[in-house]
Length: 604
Image (tube, rainbow, N blue to C red; front, top):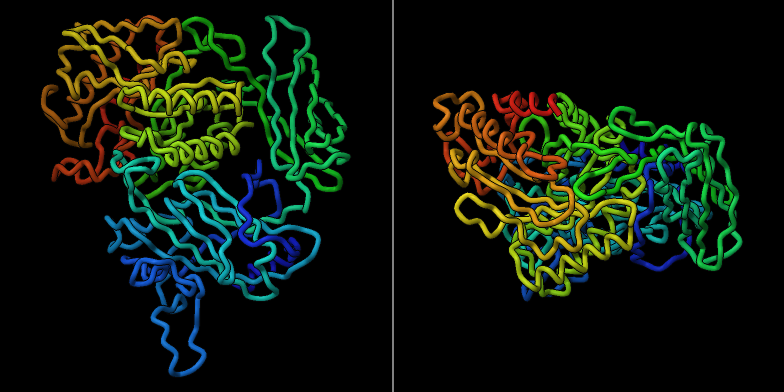
């Protein structure tokens, strides 16, 4: 393995130049476009229940902890750990399903990987993590590279000055303990998978590079003969005079630009409307886009479409669309464990397509880039969400900054993906003035980062009176689409469904972001018997008839595609630590309700 890594590193020419230690940089757009060396594979790990590898006995950080990867130099040296003699775990993965002793574990685990590098002088080396859950510190050769908080967003460090010729060591301290001030907070209805859960790679980056770029199709009048694509880009430095070129070969579009004093460029690319194929579920067209900065080059695949609302309709490319969706957790298709591979994405999205979906809600946090890009290739629209879930610490400034950073990183990674049409800022949050202020600021911030997409959140229904449910949420003024969760038939008698009336006093499209109920696959009985497939089937029949009566219904994402692990679901013989609301079992078996929803979607 070391020889292979060394050969790959030599091939891409990794760099060693002087720069400040611990350089945390903004996320690079399209990290996969750069030459890189994967650090996936076997990592040694040490379970550190009392964090003795970081704190002394008075709970003060130590100068010499596990991150030093120390070795005895003399026979009498006392060093009470050894990564090289410790077990290994496949990365990316979660420790809960890799080591049976850690199934319920929440705490600290240390990870170590050795690799070899040949340093050079004209490129930077970035260390990139797709995601680490939840609180992580990273060291390279015993020196700290950075600290990241948040379990579902990528981050990268400039480790150029930390590398050396020959063998190098990266050590990561991962802590997934829950805290009231975190995002998400202490309680949530999914498994708290700990570990380095997405890809790790070393990336070769020019000294000056395109930190971010955006290509978005501008809205146009019906039957417009010409369409305009807005292009913007910025460098990692504020320097004028750099040459930037954007080239879309298939459209015969090319423009040369020069950065201003802020290191930015912008342009409007014009193309005949009849030549431009718009991305849509029926034709998920992606164009090769070539970008160059001075002598460096990168390539992306980008689709062009517009998304907007008109009264109670959602318009894709100017035409009304009904969003036939399903909610998905990032859990492996067959059994538990954090999903992270392209194969996982293809299987889960394939099930959604079989159901008849043109849309998925990726709940309740940003999913992997593999999932988003695979959905884009398959023509599946996406709702992407940050984990402001239930009882967030609304008045804590650090909590807000945490949520804001996760929102920043979600949008930074995916704002060129044509299939993402909704940024969601929260799920089922209890109403209060403090919550309205927190989420209102997040909504405004999201719009300032990207005003080309819709903003929404999964609200709760309030003001229920007998058989009238009224949506009354102050956040209506901040969102483009009114979305809410409802569980008639599960938390309320299913026989109430035909009697229900829904009052939604906003002239905006409506998405039912959750509905459903639990069933154990293969358990059969009467339709009024809990946990049977017949109960779930009847619940879907009654809910669909009820939802069809809602004025302005623009889409649904029932809860949920497949059964997923949750420590809140403890009923022996039925739940066994799984939320059983899936239309597929945890092993990928279809329940009877699958066919009910599929038939409804076929009629839409």
